[in-house]
Structure formats: C-alpha cells, structure tokens
Image 1: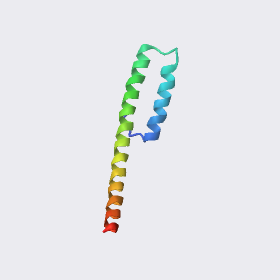
Image 2: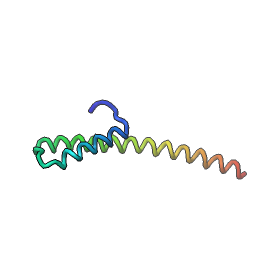
Image 3: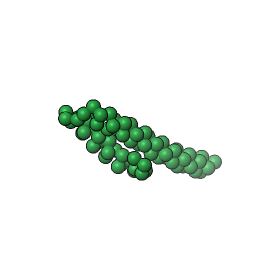
Image 4: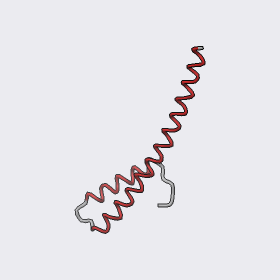
Length: 72
C-alpha cells in the first residue's frame, strides 16, 4: 500500500477488511494479511486526523487572537 489514501478511502478499505475477516471461510494466512493491512490503514487514519487536528488548533488560535485584539 504505497499510495497515500485519503481518510475516507482508508475507512472504506477498513470496512471491507472487517467484512472479509468476519467471513467464516477465510484462512489463517489470509486473516493475518488482512489484519496487517488493517493496522497499516488505522495508522494512516490517525496520521490524517493528527494533521486535521493541528490545522483546527491553528485556526482556533487565530480566532482566539482576533477576539483578544477586539476586546482590547
């Protein structure tokens, strides 16, 4: 999984993996590979969320600064 997936695409793939893992006709080797892929996707999702959180905090700080300037 070398391409950089969007958060939404990663969630979609995680849902697909979950469905495959829930199937009763899956081998141990297949489930191990799917579990590993899922773990990688989860890490990618957390990275996306971390970036968005940083952007939101920056925006919040900017708004807080504007409000403080207005109050002075």
